[in-house]
Amino acid sequence: MTNIYIRNGLLLTMRGEGLGVLEDGAIAIEGQNIVAVGRTHDLDKKYRDSETVIEAKGKAVLPGFIDVHIHTGHTIIRGEAQDVPEIEWMLKTMAPFSKYIKPEHSIAGGALGVLEGVKSGVTTFGEIGVNEGQVAEKVFIPSGVRANIADTINEIGPNSRPDANKPYIFDDALGEQKLKAGIDLVERWDSAGEGRISCIFSPQGADMMSRSLLERVKAEAVNRGKLTHIHVAQGAREAIQMKLRYNATTIQYLDRIGFLDDNIIAAHCHQTTDDEVAIIAKRGVRYASCPASIALIDGIVPPLALYLQQGGRYAGIGSDQAPGSTGHNMLIGMKTAALLNKVRHRDPTILPAWQMLRIATIGGANTIGLGDKVGSLEAGKKADVIIMDLKMPHMVPTITSPVRNIAPNIVYYGRGDEVETVIVNGKFVVENRRCVTLDEFEVMKKAQRAADEITAGAADDFMAADGYLAKAVRKGLL
Image 1 (cartoon, rainbow, N blue to C red):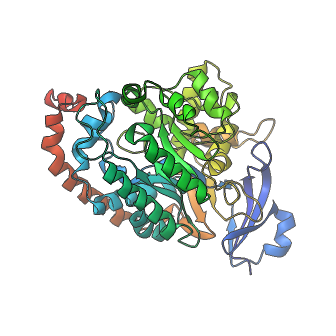
Image 2: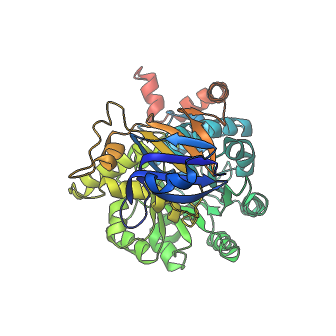
Image 3: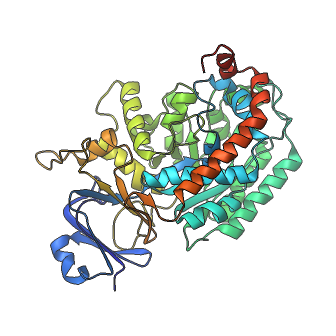
Protein backbone atom coordinates (compact mmCIF):
# COMPACT_ATOMS: atom_id res chain seq x y z
CA MET A 1 0.00 0.00 0.00
CA THR A 2 1.39 3.42 -0.95
CA ASN A 3 1.40 5.77 2.03
CA ILE A 4 0.57 9.11 0.35
CA TYR A 5 -0.85 9.92 -3.05
CA ILE A 6 -1.15 13.55 -4.23
CA ARG A 7 -3.32 14.00 -7.32
CA ASN A 8 -4.68 16.69 -9.67
CA GLY A 9 -1.96 19.18 -8.71
CA LEU A 10 0.09 21.62 -10.72
CA LEU A 11 3.51 20.01 -10.30
CA LEU A 12 6.77 21.95 -10.51
CA THR A 13 9.12 18.98 -10.56
CA MET A 14 12.42 20.84 -11.31
CA ARG A 15 13.32 18.07 -13.74
CA GLY A 16 15.19 19.17 -16.85
CA GLU A 17 16.45 22.72 -17.32
CA GLY A 18 13.30 24.57 -16.26
CA LEU A 19 10.50 23.98 -13.81
CA GLY A 20 9.49 20.61 -15.24
CA VAL A 21 5.80 21.54 -15.10
CA LEU A 22 3.18 18.80 -15.04
CA GLU A 23 -0.38 20.07 -15.23
CA ASP A 24 -2.87 17.74 -13.58
CA GLY A 25 0.07 15.88 -12.06
CA ALA A 26 0.35 13.30 -9.33
CA ILE A 27 2.96 11.93 -6.93
CA ALA A 28 3.01 8.61 -5.14
CA ILE A 29 5.01 8.30 -1.91
CA GLU A 30 5.93 5.08 -0.19
CA GLY A 31 7.88 5.17 3.06
CA GLN A 32 10.58 7.83 2.78
CA ASN A 33 10.64 7.89 -1.00
CA ILE A 34 8.83 9.17 -4.05
CA VAL A 35 7.94 6.10 -6.10
CA ALA A 36 6.09 7.67 -9.04
CA VAL A 37 5.53 11.07 -10.67
CA GLY A 38 3.24 11.55 -13.65
CA ARG A 39 -0.17 12.54 -14.96
CA THR A 40 -3.05 11.89 -12.62
CA HIS A 41 -4.98 9.76 -15.12
CA ASP A 42 -1.93 7.53 -15.56
CA LEU A 43 -1.11 7.09 -11.88
CA ASP A 44 -4.70 6.80 -10.64
CA LYS A 45 -4.96 3.22 -11.84
CA LYS A 46 -2.26 2.08 -9.43
CA TYR A 47 -2.34 4.57 -6.58
CA ARG A 48 -5.93 5.89 -6.29
CA ASP A 49 -6.63 3.63 -3.29
CA SER A 50 -3.57 4.70 -1.31
CA GLU A 51 -3.74 5.10 2.46
CA THR A 52 -3.77 8.92 2.27
CA VAL A 53 -5.03 10.69 -0.84
CA ILE A 54 -4.58 14.46 -1.17
CA GLU A 55 -6.65 16.32 -3.73
CA ALA A 56 -4.42 19.13 -5.01
CA LYS A 57 -6.58 20.79 -7.64
CA GLY A 58 -5.89 24.53 -7.65
CA LYS A 59 -2.63 23.96 -5.79
CA ALA A 60 1.07 23.97 -6.67
CA VAL A 61 3.09 20.92 -5.68
CA LEU A 62 6.85 21.32 -5.59
CA PRO A 63 10.01 20.18 -3.81
CA GLY A 64 10.59 21.64 -0.37
CA PHE A 65 12.77 24.73 -0.20
CA ILE A 66 16.44 24.38 0.77
CA ASP A 67 17.76 27.10 3.10
CA VAL A 68 21.47 26.63 2.44
CA HIS A 69 22.86 28.94 5.13
CA ILE A 70 21.07 29.54 8.40
CA HIS A 71 21.75 30.14 12.10
CA THR A 72 18.45 29.19 13.74
CA GLY A 73 19.66 29.78 17.31
CA HIS A 74 20.02 33.51 16.68
CA THR A 75 16.26 33.74 16.08
CA ILE A 76 15.99 34.27 19.82
CA ILE A 77 17.10 37.91 19.45
CA ARG A 78 15.19 38.67 16.28
CA GLY A 79 15.22 42.34 15.32
CA GLU A 80 17.90 43.40 17.82
CA ALA A 81 20.68 43.93 15.27
CA GLN A 82 19.21 45.58 12.20
CA ASP A 83 19.91 48.90 10.50
CA VAL A 84 23.42 49.19 11.97
CA PRO A 85 26.84 49.81 10.36
CA GLU A 86 28.49 46.53 9.33
CA ILE A 87 31.73 47.34 11.12
CA GLU A 88 29.94 47.25 14.49
CA TRP A 89 27.24 44.65 13.77
CA MET A 90 29.12 41.73 15.31
CA LEU A 91 31.20 43.55 17.92
CA LYS A 92 28.87 46.22 19.29
CA THR A 93 25.42 44.87 18.46
CA MET A 94 25.53 41.07 18.64
CA ALA A 95 28.40 40.63 21.12
CA PRO A 96 26.63 42.23 24.12
CA PHE A 97 23.97 39.52 23.90
CA SER A 98 26.33 36.58 23.34
CA LYS A 99 27.52 35.97 26.91
CA TYR A 100 23.93 35.87 28.14
CA ILE A 101 22.75 33.26 25.63
CA LYS A 102 22.72 29.86 27.32
CA PRO A 103 22.47 26.54 25.44
CA GLU A 104 18.80 26.24 26.35
CA HIS A 105 18.19 29.69 24.87
CA SER A 106 19.76 28.62 21.58
CA ILE A 107 17.56 25.54 21.54
CA ALA A 108 14.49 27.71 22.03
CA GLY A 109 15.66 29.98 19.22
CA GLY A 110 16.39 26.98 17.02
CA ALA A 111 12.89 25.62 17.46
CA LEU A 112 11.41 29.02 16.64
CA GLY A 113 13.60 29.34 13.52
CA VAL A 114 12.62 25.88 12.31
CA LEU A 115 8.93 26.56 12.97
CA GLU A 116 9.08 29.78 10.96
CA GLY A 117 10.98 28.13 8.13
CA VAL A 118 8.95 24.97 7.80
CA LYS A 119 5.63 26.81 7.83
CA SER A 120 6.80 28.74 4.77
CA GLY A 121 7.95 25.62 2.94
CA VAL A 122 11.55 25.02 4.07
CA THR A 123 12.26 21.31 4.38
CA THR A 124 16.08 21.36 4.58
CA PHE A 125 18.13 23.65 6.85
CA GLY A 126 21.81 24.27 6.08
CA GLU A 127 22.64 25.04 9.70
CA ILE A 128 26.01 26.06 11.10
CA GLY A 129 26.51 27.15 14.69
CA VAL A 130 27.58 25.80 18.07
CA ASN A 131 26.49 22.67 19.95
CA GLU A 132 24.69 21.48 16.83
CA GLY A 133 24.43 17.97 18.23
CA GLN A 134 22.04 19.30 20.85
CA VAL A 135 20.15 21.23 18.19
CA ALA A 136 19.86 18.04 16.12
CA GLU A 137 18.67 16.05 19.12
CA LYS A 138 16.21 18.58 20.50
CA VAL A 139 15.04 20.46 17.41
CA PHE A 140 15.81 19.01 13.99
CA ILE A 141 15.10 15.35 14.71
CA PRO A 142 11.84 15.76 16.70
CA SER A 143 10.54 18.44 14.32
CA GLY A 144 10.87 16.01 11.42
CA VAL A 145 12.81 18.34 9.12
CA ARG A 146 16.01 17.66 7.18
CA ALA A 147 19.22 19.40 8.26
CA ASN A 148 22.77 19.68 6.95
CA ILE A 149 24.70 20.79 10.02
CA ALA A 150 28.17 21.77 11.22
CA ASP A 151 29.74 23.18 14.36
CA THR A 152 31.72 26.32 13.60
CA ILE A 153 35.46 26.05 14.19
CA ASN A 154 37.59 29.09 15.00
CA GLU A 155 40.24 30.38 17.38
CA ILE A 156 38.20 33.29 18.69
CA GLY A 157 37.80 33.50 22.47
CA PRO A 158 36.08 36.14 24.63
CA ASN A 159 39.18 38.35 24.59
CA SER A 160 40.15 37.86 20.95
CA ARG A 161 38.60 40.99 19.48
CA PRO A 162 39.27 44.04 21.62
CA ASP A 163 39.60 46.27 18.54
CA ALA A 164 38.23 45.62 15.04
CA ASN A 165 41.14 47.60 13.58
CA LYS A 166 43.84 45.42 15.16
CA PRO A 167 44.59 41.73 14.43
CA TYR A 168 42.40 39.34 16.36
CA ILE A 169 44.17 37.40 19.10
CA PHE A 170 43.93 33.69 18.31
CA ASP A 171 43.48 31.05 21.01
CA ASP A 172 45.19 27.86 19.79
CA ALA A 173 43.78 25.67 22.55
CA LEU A 174 40.25 26.82 21.80
CA GLY A 175 40.78 26.04 18.12
CA GLU A 176 41.80 22.48 18.99
CA GLN A 177 38.75 22.11 21.21
CA LYS A 178 36.42 23.30 18.46
CA LEU A 179 38.04 21.07 15.84
CA LYS A 180 37.46 18.08 18.10
CA ALA A 181 33.84 19.13 18.60
CA GLY A 182 33.38 19.38 14.83
CA ILE A 183 34.77 15.88 14.33
CA ASP A 184 32.64 14.49 17.16
CA LEU A 185 29.52 15.99 15.58
CA VAL A 186 30.18 14.21 12.29
CA GLU A 187 30.97 10.90 13.96
CA ARG A 188 27.95 10.93 16.24
CA TRP A 189 25.17 12.62 14.29
CA ASP A 190 25.77 12.03 10.58
CA SER A 191 22.79 10.03 9.16
CA ALA A 192 20.78 10.39 12.40
CA GLY A 193 17.04 10.95 12.41
CA GLU A 194 16.24 8.29 9.79
CA GLY A 195 18.93 9.79 7.60
CA ARG A 196 17.52 13.33 7.78
CA ILE A 197 20.63 14.69 9.51
CA SER A 198 23.83 15.07 7.50
CA CYS A 199 26.99 16.58 8.96
CA ILE A 200 29.80 18.55 7.37
CA PHE A 201 32.61 20.86 8.56
CA SER A 202 32.61 24.62 9.07
CA PRO A 203 35.70 26.73 9.65
CA GLN A 204 33.98 29.99 10.56
CA GLY A 205 36.11 32.30 8.42
CA ALA A 206 39.65 32.84 7.20
CA ASP A 207 39.93 35.88 9.47
CA MET A 208 39.08 33.88 12.59
CA MET A 209 41.72 31.14 12.50
CA SER A 210 45.26 30.38 11.52
CA ARG A 211 46.14 28.97 8.12
CA SER A 212 47.24 25.77 9.83
CA LEU A 213 43.87 25.15 11.45
CA LEU A 214 41.98 26.21 8.35
CA GLU A 215 43.84 23.66 6.23
CA ARG A 216 43.47 20.94 8.85
CA VAL A 217 39.71 21.40 8.91
CA LYS A 218 39.47 21.11 5.14
CA ALA A 219 41.73 18.04 5.11
CA GLU A 220 39.56 16.41 7.74
CA ALA A 221 36.48 17.08 5.61
CA VAL A 222 38.05 15.76 2.41
CA ASN A 223 39.31 12.61 4.15
CA ARG A 224 35.78 11.91 5.39
CA GLY A 225 34.11 12.73 2.07
CA LYS A 226 32.43 15.83 3.51
CA LEU A 227 32.00 19.39 2.30
CA THR A 228 33.40 22.46 4.05
CA HIS A 229 31.00 25.36 4.74
CA ILE A 230 32.75 28.69 5.41
CA HIS A 231 31.92 32.40 5.60
CA VAL A 232 33.90 34.17 2.86
CA ALA A 233 34.47 37.89 2.21
CA GLN A 234 31.56 38.86 4.43
CA GLY A 235 32.24 42.54 4.99
CA ALA A 236 34.54 45.39 5.91
CA ARG A 237 35.40 43.95 9.33
CA GLU A 238 36.76 40.77 7.75
CA ALA A 239 38.51 42.76 5.03
CA ILE A 240 40.39 44.76 7.67
CA GLN A 241 41.55 41.60 9.42
CA MET A 242 42.72 39.94 6.19
CA LYS A 243 44.63 43.06 5.18
CA LEU A 244 46.32 43.33 8.58
CA ARG A 245 47.30 39.66 8.82
CA TYR A 246 47.92 38.60 5.22
CA ASN A 247 48.02 41.84 3.21
CA ALA A 248 45.41 40.30 0.90
CA THR A 249 41.69 40.06 0.37
CA THR A 250 39.95 36.90 1.53
CA ILE A 251 39.64 35.56 -2.01
CA GLN A 252 43.28 36.36 -2.82
CA TYR A 253 44.42 34.59 0.33
CA LEU A 254 42.23 31.50 -0.04
CA ASP A 255 43.15 31.12 -3.70
CA ARG A 256 46.84 31.54 -2.94
CA ILE A 257 46.82 28.68 -0.44
CA GLY A 258 44.80 26.42 -2.76
CA PHE A 259 41.73 26.35 -0.54
CA LEU A 260 39.10 27.10 -3.18
CA ASP A 261 37.57 24.11 -4.98
CA ASP A 262 34.30 22.20 -5.39
CA ASN A 263 34.47 20.84 -1.84
CA ILE A 264 33.84 24.34 -0.51
CA ILE A 265 30.49 26.00 0.25
CA ALA A 266 31.26 29.72 0.42
CA ALA A 267 28.67 31.85 2.18
CA HIS A 268 28.13 35.55 1.39
CA CYS A 269 31.12 36.57 -0.83
CA HIS A 270 29.86 40.13 -1.13
CA GLN A 271 33.10 41.92 -0.21
CA THR A 272 34.55 40.92 -3.58
CA THR A 273 35.50 42.36 -6.94
CA ASP A 274 33.96 41.02 -10.13
CA ASP A 275 37.27 39.33 -10.91
CA GLU A 276 37.21 37.59 -7.54
CA VAL A 277 33.70 36.29 -8.19
CA ALA A 278 35.06 34.85 -11.45
CA ILE A 279 37.77 33.06 -9.45
CA ILE A 280 35.17 31.52 -7.14
CA ALA A 281 33.17 30.31 -10.13
CA LYS A 282 36.22 29.00 -11.97
CA ARG A 283 37.41 27.00 -8.96
CA GLY A 284 34.03 25.27 -8.73
CA VAL A 285 33.16 26.75 -5.34
CA ARG A 286 29.54 26.26 -4.26
CA TYR A 287 27.87 29.57 -3.44
CA ALA A 288 25.48 30.22 -0.54
CA SER A 289 24.02 33.68 -1.15
CA CYS A 290 22.13 35.46 1.64
CA PRO A 291 20.62 38.55 -0.01
CA ALA A 292 18.24 39.69 2.72
CA SER A 293 20.72 39.60 5.60
CA ILE A 294 23.57 41.15 3.64
CA ALA A 295 21.35 43.95 2.37
CA LEU A 296 20.48 44.79 5.98
CA ILE A 297 23.92 44.28 7.52
CA ASP A 298 26.18 45.56 4.75
CA GLY A 299 23.97 47.45 2.34
CA ILE A 300 25.49 45.34 -0.44
CA VAL A 301 23.90 43.05 -3.05
CA PRO A 302 25.60 39.64 -2.93
CA PRO A 303 26.85 38.60 -6.41
CA LEU A 304 24.46 35.72 -7.07
CA ALA A 305 23.67 36.57 -10.69
CA LEU A 306 27.29 37.47 -11.43
CA TYR A 307 28.49 34.15 -10.01
CA LEU A 308 26.13 32.29 -12.34
CA GLN A 309 27.09 34.48 -15.32
CA GLN A 310 30.74 33.66 -14.64
CA GLY A 311 30.01 29.95 -14.93
CA GLY A 312 29.35 29.10 -11.29
CA ARG A 313 27.84 25.65 -11.13
CA TYR A 314 26.00 25.42 -7.82
CA ALA A 315 24.22 28.25 -5.99
CA GLY A 316 21.56 28.40 -3.33
CA ILE A 317 20.09 31.06 -1.08
CA GLY A 318 20.07 31.23 2.70
CA SER A 319 18.19 33.27 5.26
CA ASP A 320 21.25 33.55 7.53
CA GLN A 321 20.13 34.85 10.95
CA ALA A 322 17.04 36.65 12.19
CA PRO A 323 18.59 39.56 14.20
CA GLY A 324 19.87 41.16 10.99
CA SER A 325 17.70 39.68 8.26
CA THR A 326 14.12 39.39 7.09
CA GLY A 327 13.64 36.05 8.83
CA HIS A 328 13.65 32.43 7.73
CA ASN A 329 11.12 32.66 4.92
CA MET A 330 12.54 31.47 1.59
CA LEU A 331 9.75 33.14 -0.37
CA ILE A 332 11.00 36.48 0.91
CA GLY A 333 14.55 35.33 0.18
CA MET A 334 13.76 34.48 -3.44
CA LYS A 335 11.99 37.76 -4.05
CA THR A 336 14.77 39.76 -2.41
CA ALA A 337 17.47 37.98 -4.40
CA ALA A 338 15.66 38.51 -7.69
CA LEU A 339 14.88 42.19 -7.14
CA LEU A 340 18.26 43.19 -5.75
CA ASN A 341 20.18 41.45 -8.51
CA LYS A 342 17.99 43.03 -11.19
CA VAL A 343 18.81 46.42 -9.70
CA ARG A 344 22.51 45.62 -9.32
CA HIS A 345 22.77 44.68 -13.00
CA ARG A 346 20.15 47.19 -14.18
CA ASP A 347 18.62 44.31 -16.09
CA PRO A 348 15.06 43.06 -15.39
CA THR A 349 15.79 39.75 -17.15
CA ILE A 350 18.35 38.78 -14.49
CA LEU A 351 17.29 35.88 -12.23
CA PRO A 352 13.78 35.32 -13.58
CA ALA A 353 11.21 33.72 -11.32
CA TRP A 354 11.62 30.23 -12.77
CA GLN A 355 15.36 30.37 -12.09
CA MET A 356 14.84 31.57 -8.53
CA LEU A 357 12.57 28.59 -7.85
CA ARG A 358 15.27 26.26 -9.15
CA ILE A 359 17.90 27.98 -7.01
CA ALA A 360 15.68 27.56 -3.94
CA THR A 361 15.13 23.84 -4.60
CA ILE A 362 17.42 21.71 -6.75
CA GLY A 363 20.09 24.42 -6.86
CA GLY A 364 20.22 24.62 -3.10
CA ALA A 365 20.21 20.85 -2.74
CA ASN A 366 23.20 20.56 -5.07
CA THR A 367 24.99 23.38 -3.27
CA ILE A 368 25.03 21.56 0.07
CA GLY A 369 25.66 18.15 -1.45
CA LEU A 370 22.16 16.67 -1.19
CA GLY A 371 21.08 16.92 -4.82
CA ASP A 372 21.00 13.15 -5.21
CA LYS A 373 18.41 12.92 -2.42
CA VAL A 374 16.20 16.01 -2.56
CA GLY A 375 15.47 19.16 -4.53
CA SER A 376 13.29 17.72 -7.31
CA LEU A 377 10.21 15.57 -7.62
CA GLU A 378 11.22 12.29 -9.21
CA ALA A 379 11.03 8.61 -8.42
CA GLY A 380 13.85 7.44 -6.18
CA LYS A 381 14.31 10.71 -4.33
CA LYS A 382 13.28 11.37 -0.76
CA ALA A 383 9.71 12.57 -0.35
CA ASP A 384 10.30 16.20 0.64
CA VAL A 385 7.24 17.87 -0.86
CA ILE A 386 5.26 21.05 -0.24
CA ILE A 387 1.77 22.00 -1.42
CA MET A 388 0.85 25.67 -1.90
CA ASP A 389 -2.71 26.94 -2.15
CA LEU A 390 -3.06 29.10 -5.27
CA LYS A 391 -6.66 30.10 -4.50
CA MET A 392 -5.76 33.15 -2.45
CA PRO A 393 -6.41 36.78 -3.45
CA HIS A 394 -2.75 37.60 -3.99
CA MET A 395 -2.17 34.42 -6.05
CA VAL A 396 -5.22 34.52 -8.33
CA PRO A 397 -5.59 34.17 -11.26
CA THR A 398 -3.76 31.01 -12.24
CA ILE A 399 -2.91 31.26 -15.94
CA THR A 400 -1.41 28.48 -18.01
CA SER A 401 -1.50 29.99 -21.54
CA PRO A 402 0.16 31.67 -23.30
CA VAL A 403 2.56 32.02 -20.35
CA ARG A 404 2.27 30.10 -17.10
CA ASN A 405 2.22 32.65 -14.29
CA ILE A 406 2.78 30.15 -11.46
CA ALA A 407 6.48 30.85 -10.96
CA PRO A 408 6.23 34.67 -10.85
CA ASN A 409 3.16 34.47 -8.63
CA ILE A 410 5.05 32.30 -6.12
CA VAL A 411 8.31 34.28 -6.21
CA TYR A 412 6.95 37.82 -6.35
CA TYR A 413 3.65 37.48 -4.49
CA GLY A 414 4.19 34.53 -2.16
CA ARG A 415 4.15 35.25 1.58
CA GLY A 416 4.41 31.79 3.14
CA ASP A 417 0.83 31.36 4.32
CA GLU A 418 0.04 29.68 0.99
CA VAL A 419 1.97 26.62 2.21
CA GLU A 420 -0.68 24.28 3.55
CA THR A 421 1.17 20.94 3.49
CA VAL A 422 4.80 20.03 4.15
CA ILE A 423 6.04 16.46 3.86
CA VAL A 424 9.61 15.51 4.79
CA ASN A 425 11.01 12.02 4.32
CA GLY A 426 7.51 10.81 3.57
CA LYS A 427 5.96 12.12 6.80
CA PHE A 428 3.70 15.09 7.44
CA VAL A 429 5.35 18.02 9.20
CA VAL A 430 2.72 20.62 8.32
CA GLU A 431 -0.96 19.76 7.70
CA ASN A 432 -3.67 22.33 7.07
CA ARG A 433 -1.08 25.07 7.71
CA ARG A 434 -0.32 23.79 11.22
CA CYS A 435 2.95 22.20 12.25
CA VAL A 436 2.09 18.75 13.58
CA THR A 437 5.56 17.88 14.90
CA LEU A 438 6.02 20.93 17.11
CA ASP A 439 3.64 22.57 19.55
CA GLU A 440 3.53 26.01 17.95
CA PHE A 441 2.24 27.82 21.03
CA GLU A 442 4.83 26.17 23.29
CA VAL A 443 7.68 26.98 20.90
CA MET A 444 6.74 30.65 20.85
CA LYS A 445 6.18 30.74 24.62
CA LYS A 446 9.64 29.30 25.34
CA ALA A 447 11.26 31.60 22.82
CA GLN A 448 9.66 34.67 24.41
CA ARG A 449 10.79 33.58 27.87
CA ALA A 450 14.34 32.98 26.65
CA ALA A 451 14.46 36.34 24.87
CA ASP A 452 13.27 38.10 28.02
CA GLU A 453 16.05 36.45 30.05
CA ILE A 454 18.76 37.31 27.50
CA THR A 455 17.78 40.92 27.00
CA ALA A 456 17.34 41.56 30.74
CA GLY A 457 20.93 40.46 31.28
CA ALA A 458 22.40 42.16 28.22
CA ALA A 459 20.65 45.53 28.33
CA ASP A 460 23.36 47.38 30.27
CA ASP A 461 26.18 45.86 28.20
CA PHE A 462 24.36 46.73 25.01
CA MET A 463 23.97 50.36 25.98
CA ALA A 464 27.55 50.54 27.28
CA ALA A 465 28.83 49.38 23.88
CA ASP A 466 27.39 52.66 22.60
CA GLY A 467 26.62 51.38 19.14
CA TYR A 468 24.35 52.85 16.51
CA LEU A 469 21.17 51.38 17.99
CA ALA A 470 22.13 52.34 21.54
CA LYS A 471 22.43 55.94 20.39
CA ALA A 472 19.02 55.68 18.72
CA VAL A 473 17.52 54.40 21.97
CA ARG A 474 19.00 57.30 23.91
CA LYS A 475 17.45 59.70 21.43
CA GLY A 476 14.07 58.05 21.88
CA LEU A 477 13.95 56.89 18.26
CA LEU A 478 13.36 53.24 19.19
